[in-house]
Length: 272
Image 1 (cartoon, rainbow, N blue to C red):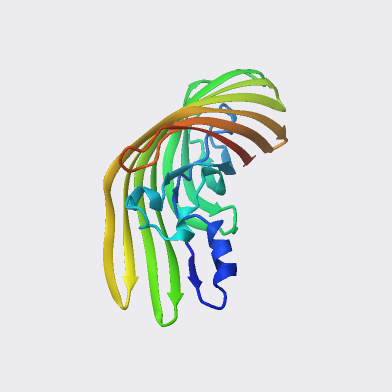
Image 2 (cartoon, rainbow, N blue to C red):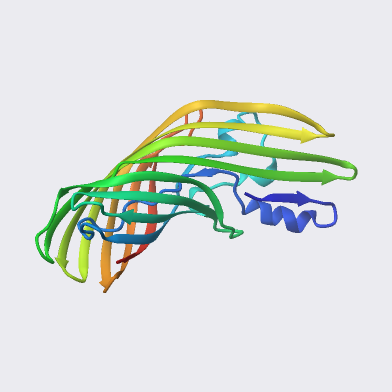
């Protein structure tokens, strides 16, 4: 992701910038805000989805000893991240959509964009509306792979130390997308979902040309669930879907508490 060095000359300014950054493994799968029932056999949709506020693991999940996490990496909150999907959906039949996603994420401050993984899945149509109005229901299983890495380098005179956190995650997501289309231009969507991940992470300290591995989180399961709500507004082939998700989730690591997260999001799709 990004590497930041602190030198004596620029230490104060760089430290302030680092305090607003985060070292974390974000969830990079925005909830299914785009409505069900819009694609027919042979149709194609490209979309971008963004969702604020979901992180799987941070340095604090690894560095359990007091003082073991450098000060620049200690400041972390869930709403400092935007998780983004670039998705491509194709309908080989009227009942099945094939979906591929590129996972992109960025901290809000400082703003950077990083590709961190991908996903492949499908939407299976359980109920299709007739005409421009009515109810559609789709089940959207997908499999996800994510990796992330971040470094913080600190220098003092001739001495330097680099802390590197490396994260890996494999998982699956299962949203149920229920859409009531009021008219051709307007649809309401509710999407209950479940997520399950296996996470592995480790923290390396590099100093004086030697590497010391200080902590490791072996493959650890993390399970969460919630509900996404959105409103879709159609402008011809272009579809805009602002929404919000409520998620009960925990991060990886021992004794991680459950949190109720409020995650605003936005999806923009184009069909042809």
